[in-house]
Length: 164
Image (cartoon, rainbow, N blue to C red; front, top):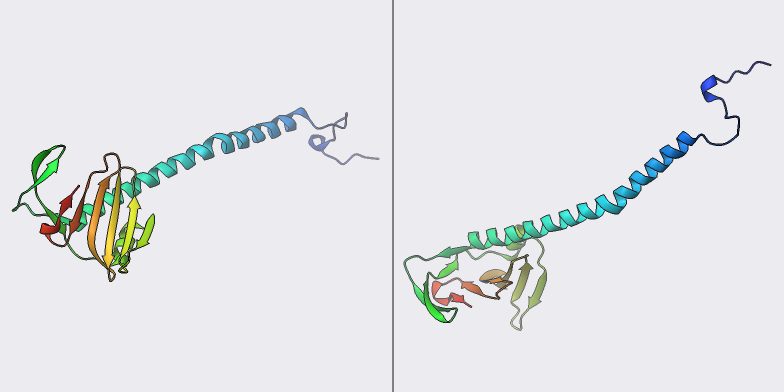
């Protein structure tokens, strides 16, 4: 009887698995373990920090675009125990809720006051932005530094501007 099995496909004489196959399987297993144990958590942390940085940038860009500073007027405001001169700010335009959410994304907090006004809050890594709406139109922006809790409330009129 003639053996028609090619010499490279001959079963081993001992009936066991060749040691090279075991080493290849161990290398693949070690690679998968390393990927899941080290790379994925690192990638998730990097994506989370990038998302926080992007949100902070969106908050800052929105505030800069939504507010205009009136350089023709100066108001004395208390700042660190002394009085300082500042230029008041006002809203550039009264936006709708949908327009603000389109620019900033979904808010972190949403509340409704007793008169039906809606207050949406976006929290970034360094700043917090609260937008207050009456009948769906923006009437006040509060921009607060999360480290110092100092900020500014900006309304439609420069005379209602209020730093805190």
